[in-house]
Amino acid sequence: MRVMVFTKVAELGDLSAPTPEELEAFAAMDRFTEELVEAGVFVAAAGLKNGPESRRLTFDGTELAVVDGPFAESKELVAGFSIWQVKDIDEALAWVKRAPMTAGSVIEILPFYEVEDLAEFVTPEELAAPRGGERGKLGVA
Image (cartoon, rainbow, N blue to C red; front, side, top):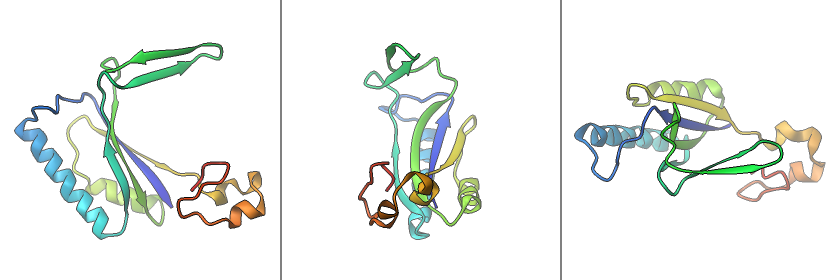
């Protein structure tokens, strides 16, 4: 089972001049990520910028609105994500409980739809197709 793990924070500091606390938080996350890699769980991860180059798009059914970042009015900002390969949601939860967290942070675990989950929507040929990076028409790898 693949899961996406979102890390949310109440506010994102200015990372151009990190504080000693921020540097220690990054070091702790690096150590945790190494544990994930060594366990064969880690697939990918990245931090996300909430700056002037970010955009929020909303669609009300007739019009698309684009808002420039940063999104200071948000209660929770998605600060980063990682993708893990785990046997089930309980294993993902066990890993998250070991993650270094700072006060006010929130972590969400969302499983990916896998081809098998969409069996009634795809052909037998699509179900049998190789999945190593190739995508079917549903974008499920």
